[in-house]
Image (cartoon, rainbow, N blue to C red):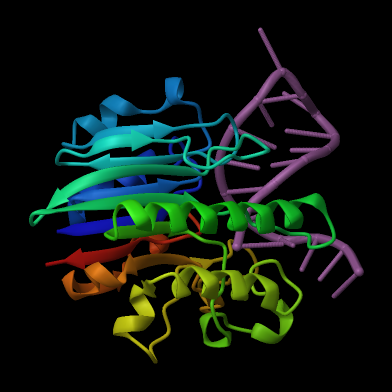
Length: 258
DNA sequence: ATGGCGTATAACATACGA
């Protein structure tokens, strides 16, 4: 089974690109972020015509997340975090898989820049709420997979020029420590678990020829709980959509479970 | 230090992203 995660940067602007991806690679589940639209303007039918049900937590203009699934998913929730700013950044589901129930969480963690503003405080608070939520969730069900746009560069080798990001909200030590705190609850950064030394960029800025120069960063992740790590067969960064016309600035990351 | 590009909006300039 393939579970994919992709920050699409507007589901409506990206619809043809998304459809092409679904047809070509046929992932079983896709977690999408930054859909930038409300539930009522989400293209349910277009996605349905390719065999995917959509579970949507939308928001006008900004943010917004959704789960696309070919098979059945249960217990969809979008209220598992108290978000002071009422932004649509998390949606969770349950999935029956090999006699286990997997709690699958899709996140779009705040960017946090600039660091001297409320946006940075919001990111830190959001991460603290998320950590609290995960502690509680683990008590109920150890089998958790979190996928999404974390807006966290975990380490120096995950960005093309780490020196220029030392005071950036994506790479600040304080933020990397919070990411580490999540891992320490009992999660594995699936990409690094399988590929300790291989570059794994998932985002390239639209500006300054970042894609052509490979000035990227690894900010989209799958975190897999210890109880499920043996079920991870592979993880791939699929660069095909980023190279197309009218691309998102992120590209999908695909987790293969056995 | 700035701006480069892309998306959205009761908009035609501004907010946001990373």
